[in-house]
Amino acid sequence: MATDAFAAERARLRDECFGRLFLPGGLPLNTDTYKRTMWSAVPDLAVLPAAYTLTLRKGLTEPGADGRLIMAGHEAMLAQWFHRPLRRGDVELARAWAARGSAVDAFPHAVWDALLTSAPTGEVFLPIDIDGFPGGQTFLPGLPCLSLEGPGGLVSYLEPAMCRYFAPVLQATKARLMRQATPRDAEFGLRSAFNDIAHLVMLLARYVGGSDGQPQLTSSDLAEFLYPELFRSVGTIGHEMMSAGQAPGKSLAEAEYEMMDRFVSAHGRAALLCDLVDAESVGLENAIRVMKAHPGNTGVGIRVDSGDIAGQCVLYYRQMQAAGLGTRTIVFEDEVTPETVRAVYDRFRRETGVEPTMLFPGAGGYWWRAVHRDTVAAAFKRSATDGRPNVKFSNSPGKESLGGRLRVFADGDTLVVGDISEPAPGEPLFVPLVRQGRVVYSESFAEQAERARLTWDRYRRTRLAPGLRATMDRLNEQRRVEVAAARARLETK
Image 1 (tube, rainbow, N blue to C red):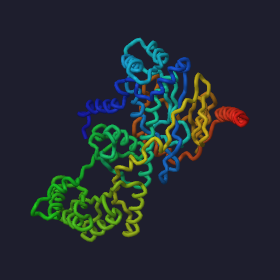
Image 2: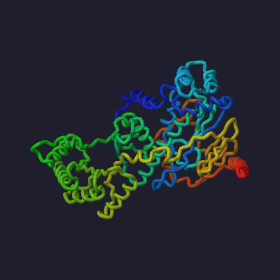
Image 3: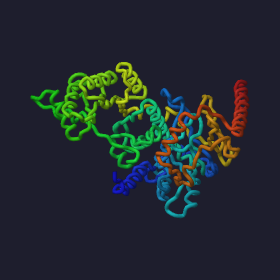
């Protein structure tokens, strides 16, 4: 395939796709209102250097996940604030809106003035550094997966964008679960995404989490054009074509057969869609008839996507064997999950005595099921101010945060969280992602996918490094004493 002819346009469209995720026009209003109210109230603190961490507090509960998550999505998630520099005029527009248009008259002048003063030109890069797990890294919930450092009032603005990491992380993890369930790729289309860019981000996360190094199949033409090294398009018959042949005076069966035959005659290959009338009678007869009409063309297979899909896989396999048609691919879909795939495979084995190597799962909605922030409880918390550890305490287990400038290390099968100031307690896992507002992370998707494969079964437990443990013990003891004293005072009133 000659790709050079498309390279320039491909590069432009890749940039445009991720540019669409950049906060609108560089306008620093794409955040929570309370960022303005907080940092306008304490301007002295707003300009101090601070550290924040993104933590996914919970894991995916699907069978086989065992709490594990896979990092993905840097290319899209970092683009939300760092795809281009911010424009001075947009900062001033946000300032003017806060003063004269918004219902909340507050703006953190100190932190934004400091930024504008540092950059005399019309564009400014946020003086923020981000470190975190590289793409494909398997990790466990409850640990920081990103650490962000810079002027606290500016880093704070990033919270909504950074919390959106939940989507590609969940989708990469789902891809690994699907890969465990089937040796075959799980092709699917475009319609389950809520917009085209979200679909592309999901496809890339799916590649990172579930690729075996080969191009994955999709019916998204955009994905194949932008990333031909990662995706390969497949096209087949849809219900709209199958029903187009229906007409007065023509039987439903004959209309269905005509559409099947015309498609095979035109394209050679097909996954015959057999459920327009009835998959287990009319569609079955027509599929066998079409295959017999094109002897030797083993590229013609079957697609089942409604009703008893496991039973239909068995039925079509047996009928094709009885007709002397050999083994053909049978695509089965209907919002299949890894559990569905295993159930179909198990039934096929039981009833045919044959390994289901010809069965090919299709999935769509699965990649969006439970993909929301609450699934992993994404939390963005301040962990240090001017070198001092900051902690959010909680009466609910699992909602406490860790204090310090945090990094994560590997020690055998254990992930260890430590402060940057103490000796490294293992192999460093965080890598630079952003330096002074410029994205520096540039690994290929193939490298990320290989890391997901290598690290999926590696880590089983977590712990705190000695220095961080001592810090947390001290702060928790301080909290215990102060809470006990306050409760005693309240009891005497």
